[in-house]
Structures are given as C-alpha cells and as structure tokens.
Amino acid sequence: MQASLEDFYVKYALNAAEGVSEVASIGGFVQEYQVDVNPEALKAYGIGIDKVMMAVKNSNRDVGAETIEINKVEYLVRGLGYIKNIADLEEAVVAVNNNVPVRVKDVAVVSLGPATRQGALDKDGAEVVGGVVVARYGSNPLQVINNVKNKIREITPGLPKKTLADGTVSQLTVVPFYDRTQLIHETIGTLESALSHEILITIIVVIVLVFNLRASLIISGLLPVAVLIAFIVMRYSGVDANIVALSGIAIAIGVMVDVGIVFVENIVRHLDMPENKGKRGRELRDLIYNATTEVSGAITTALATTVISFLPVFAMESAEGKLFRPLAFTKTFALLGTLVLGVAVLPTLAHLLFSIRYDKRRVRRAWNVAFIAAGVALASYTQQWLPLVLCLIGANNLLEHPLGRAAS
Image (cartoon, rainbow, N blue to C red; front, side, top):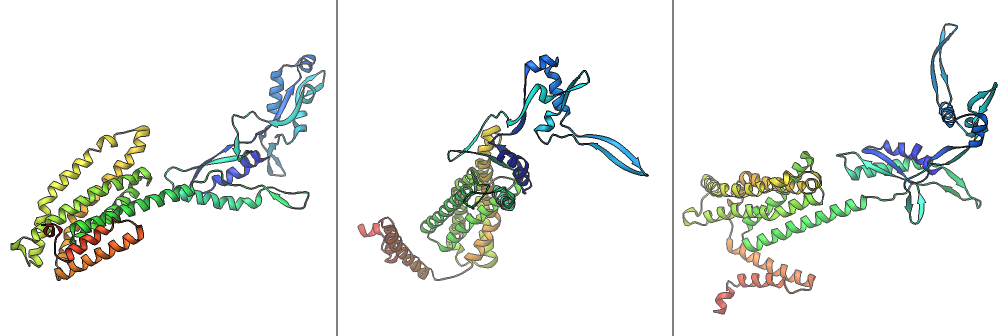
C-alpha cells in the first residue's frame, strides 16, 4: 500500500516542486498480479505456457478504434480492457477447445503478491518506504529543500487515515530521512565565521604592525571589497560556494594583504621624504600616482606568477578536477580583484585620506591608550597573559621610552 502511494501520489507531487529533477522510490514492495501455472492442467488441455502469457498480456490493454457516426454525430470508439481485479484476469480466455473456452483460472492460480526487489529501506529498525529527491543541476539546494517541504505540507492532508479501536485517528505521514538543511547552514556558518575571524585578525595585525591609521584603513578596506568581488564573479561564472571554493579565498587573504601593504608602504615612503612634506592637491596626486606605478609592475608579475602556477589545476578533469578547480577559480578571482582594487581604487582612497591633516602626537597617544585598553580587555576576557603584550607596546610608546634604550 505504502509503495503504491509513493509511486502514484507522493512521487508525482514532489516532482512538481520547483528545482526537483527526479524522485527515485526506494523500499517497500511493488504489488503485482502473480499467475502460478499448473503444468498438469496445461498438459491436460494441450496448451503451451506461451499461450497463457499471450492471454495475460492481451487481457490488460486499452484499444483505440476509429469513430462511428450516429445521426450525423461522430462518436469515438475505445475498448477499455485494463485489469481492475483478480477476477478480470482469471476470466481471460487462453484457448478454445471444442467450442469451450479455457480461461486462465482453469490452468493457473491468480493472486496479488509482491514483486522481486533488490533492496530495502530501514529507519530506526523498521522497514519503510521512501524516495530520494534529486535537485536539478545548477539549482540552489537549500531553496529546493524548502520547496519540497512546502509540497509535503500540501499533500499531507490527502494521505490515508485510519481510525483505531480506541477512537484515535492514525494518519500516514511523510517524515525526512536525511535533510541537508542543517548541514548547509552549519557549513555556511562555519565558513562565514572562519572568513570573518581571518579578516578581523589580519586587520588587527596590520593595524598593530603598520601603526599608521590611514595606511591601516586603506589596507584593511581592501580585504572585504576584494572578497566581495570574488563572490560576484563566482555568482556569474557558475562556481559553487562550497568548502573547497571558499578555502581558495581564505588562502588568498595573505596575498591580498601583501598587495595592499606593498602599495601603501611605498606611498607612505614617498610621503615621508623631506622634499615631499606638505604636498597637497595635484602634487599629492602625482606623488601617489608615481608611487603606485613604481611597484604595480612587480605586483602584477608576482600575482601573474601565482595565477599561472594554478594552470595545471585548471586542466584537471574527472573527480580531481571537480574537487580542486573551484579552489583555483576562487583564489584567482580574489587575486585579480585585489590587483584591480590596488591599481584603480587604492590610489584614490590614499589621496583622500592622506589629504587630511591632524596632530600626529595626539593620534599616536590615542592609539597607545587604545592598545592598553584592548590588552586589558582581552586579558580579562581570555584569562591569558598574551594580550598584555598590547598593553606593554602601548605603555612603551606612550612613555616615548623604547625598551631597548631603557635596557641600555
């Protein structure tokens, strides 16, 4: 009963859900008419088993004829011959001996029984009937799963019900056997957390080591925008956002930071030259342009070398290609996006930020106080001594008395 319900009701309903390619039924028994032939009866009537097979086949089909005209009205003629029960099959004529029809029931026993099967489906120790829903290629798995769940809620009221002896109503239900929703959400959450933490830690390291607010803002702002560009290119190039693909972005973050550091440090180096002090407007713009073009060739060569080194990965086919090509694509997208930002956007942002004038001593003092506060907060939160290094750096710079000089 459950297998027939799956094959002729649930299966077609789920196939109608948007994004579903097919629904493969599994488990249960397929009901069939079984004809157990009596060899002695066949011998007595002088009938071969091939005639029994032909009689069974011919007794279960619809036949379409032409039309018949009655009172200038044409009617379609159709022979309805599908078997509806065991009696219909038993009455099928196998042969005629001496004007006496020999029916199937005269030479065989007809019954309903399960067809031979090659597998079964077990859930919590009980045999059940199920279906495997296959998503259409290129569709969003999470959206397809939600569409299937909505369709299940629609067809649930139409499933068979049974009133038990105690008066309670028992209804056949469709329950999930394996639901990928939780796995998808956990995977996306893990990757989002890993990327966010990696970008945050990188930004903190850049701020601490560069120790220049404007330079740190330029370098740090490069990361999320480059990652966004990589996701946009992935969307329109058909690269799935799986674990391997997003790992390529995570691997590329270090190189992306290096690109920003090289560009910005060269700009800062030019700005710190005595002859460039106090430049504004067009002079500052030309200085930033010259500093950018000075290193852009070397950076382009370095990134091109990294991209070219992935050409063997792009040439992979079969299973290894499906596994590693997304990583190569996403890393390439991230690096190319970083190069475009470094050449086109970073100089403009540097011109805007470095045009702002402020008291360096006050800003440096504020940074040192922030380091001390951050170190105390992290030490109290993590219960570890390592964050106190920030306090030490901030206090040392605040007192303008380097540790090395104090030791000497």
